[in-house]
Image 1 (cartoon, rainbow, N blue to C red):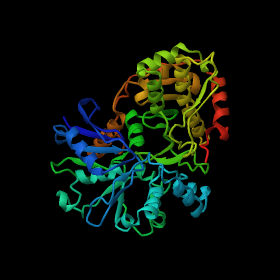
Image 2 (cartoon, rainbow, N blue to C red; image 1 turned 30 degrees about the horizontal axis):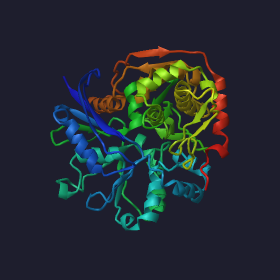
Image 3 (tube, rainbow, N blue to C red; image 1 turned 45 degrees about the vertical axis):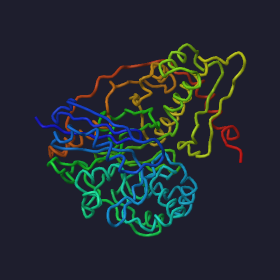
Image 4 (tube, one colour; image 1 turned 135 degrees about the horizontal axis):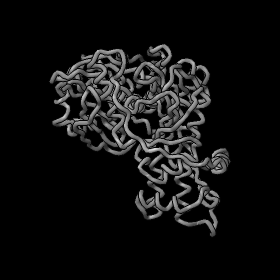
Length: 473
C-alpha cells in the first residue's frame, strides 16, 4: 500500500495528512501553529512543518504542498531569505496596486494579460512596495517564490548553504498558484517577467512552471514531490469540485470559486481569473472579512461561537432592521482597503444580542452572496454551494446560508480539504496517469431554505452608500 502526504501551509497553521494513494483514506494527520500577523519569516513555516510532519512525512511515497496564495518570499543570490514574507492579508501595498494598474495600461489590459486586476493581496504589488519603501532589501532580491514554492524547494533540499541547503536547486511552481502573482498569464501558462521587472526595478529569477501531475523533485528519503499549488486550488482538488458547484469557504478569508474549462478576464477586478491545479481554470472572489467578523461579534456579546450561533437563530431574518457592513479590516472584494465596518438601523427596540448576532451572520453571508453573483457575471451557472471553512461548523451559518445565497447548500464532512487536495496531487504525480485518482467524495449535509432577497437588498443599500463606509480623512 502506497501512502502520500498532503501539506496545507495556511496563514494560521500547517496541517499534514497522510493518506492511502489508492482511495484517499486518511491514515494519520497532525498540525502546528504559525505566528499571527501579515508578515512571517518563512523559517517559521519550515519549523512548523518539521514539527507537524515528524513521523508522518517520512512514511510517504510522495508529498504535495498547498499553501496560502500571494505571499512574497524574497531570496538573495545565495538562497537566503531577504526579509520576512509579506502575506496576502497585508494591505499596505494598496497605493502601489492602484499605481500599477494605471501604469501598465489600465484594468482592461491587466485582465487581458494576467486574468486579474491586482489588488493589495497580489505579489506584484508587494514587489513595488518593497522597491519604494525598502530599497536596501529590494536591491538584494535575486529570486521571488510563493509560500508553497519555497516549502517544496526546501523539501527537495533547496535553501541557503548556511542552513544545509543547496541554493542552486531549481525551484518549481504550478500554474494555479502562479496565477495569483500578477505577473503570470493563466490563459497561456507563461510568466510575464516584464511585469515583475517593472514592479521591482530589476529582473528576478522566477520558478519553473511545472505540469499539473509532474514530479518536480524528491525528498532526502526518496519521496516524489509534486508541483504543489495554492490553497484554493488545493481545496478544489480535495473536494472534487464538479461543474455547477461553487465552493464558498468562510475562514480567515472568505472565498467563492468554481472550476471551469475557460479562462476568465474580469476588468472590474471583482473576480480573480486564476488557474486551477488540473489544467483548467478557477475564477475566484475573495473577501478579507469572514470568520473573524463572527469571532469579534461573539467577543463583544460575551459568548463563544456556539453561543453566537444560538443567539442568531433566535432572531428573525433581517435582524429586526439591523444591518452590518462587515468591512472591519478594509476589504478586497469589492476593493476598499480603507473601508471600515458600519452598523445601521440600531434602535432601543431592536438592540438585542439575538439581533446583533443575526446581523453579523447575515452580513458575512451577504458579502459572500455578492461574490457568487460576481462569478455569475463570468459565465458560471451555480447549481449548489459547497460550504467549508471554520465558520461552516456554525449551525446558524448553515441554516441561514441557503436563504441568503438563494441556492441549495451542502456542507461536506469536516476534513482538511486543502491538504487532501495536495495529497491527491501527490498521488496523481506518483501514478503517472493522465487524470487525478478517483477518490470518493466526502459525505455532506444538505440545507435548503426559502430565499430572503429583502435581507440582501438592505445590505446592498448600505454596501453602496460610500458615505457610510469611508473612513474620514
